[in-house]
Length: 367
Image 1 (spheres, rainbow, N blue to C red):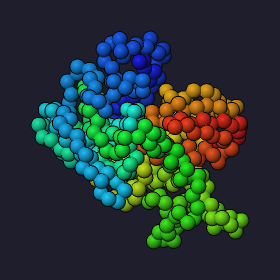
Image 2: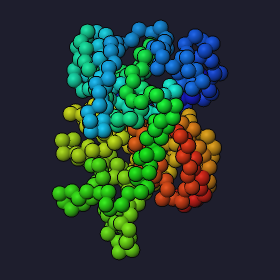
Image 3: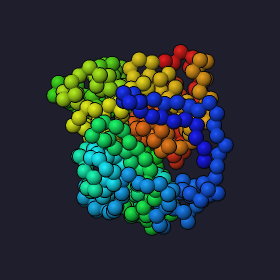
Image 4: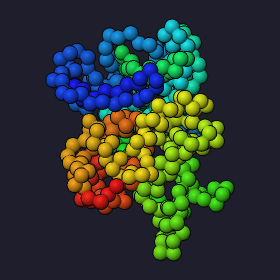
């Protein structure tokens, strides 16, 4: 284990990311005694068997219980996590880092359920998570973040990851959990047709609440587009347009359907709760030079290997862990899939593994 960059908030609420000048010598988690379950070979250390100790720190939040609430019969399962506020102040907007596991204990997905209510010292609250039935075998949680009443952003990891609960089929050695959510979203974005869209009240098109922008509507209506295809980057541009509107529109009138797509929770009641999330993505989900901005962001990830030369336009790289990439970008895997789909418009040759992505192209004019 080692570290190569850090992020933090200033007293004025500014989000800052920085890389260290030198990367410290890595240490073995096994040698230090604080084992973790990311290593798929360490099946005995997986939380599907028992809780996993991460450290001796005193937790600010107490994860009292995690329970499966069942299948609703309409294709979704739900589960609840009871969290107790062990700080000495009232906090709000508690968000959990939820981890999905496959039958072998490997990480197969992440999500970030949130509860916006105020929680007094010593008070508990149940945070509910929802996902597709049959997609994952187990679920547990390893981290959290929240806001104090003074607006301070606080994040951390639980000192002990609870034993995962069963939420799907655990009898098969191979199941559908190996299909990346990123790949599923990518496939949706790259195979959209007008038949997948719905008409809104003003005669435009939408896909799952994302409004298709004018340039993409023009192609849909073009007489040469006899198959009614939608450009691969259309959903990326829809997200970028909404994010641009966030800056200028009043918060109450701002639609906000991009929030669950990008961040995995509904639009909060208060704008201040959403500001850190928007600040984190506003530099690479953009309408101006989107390709370069996305490549700049991908190049900063720890799970990237290969060449990303924006100056020469040569790209031959691999994202080794799509789940890790979405966590570092602080977005959902669905959002990452829509971003990668946009890259296709610039002539990329891509290949997906179970949880990886390869991209190769030469395009010196791509912006």
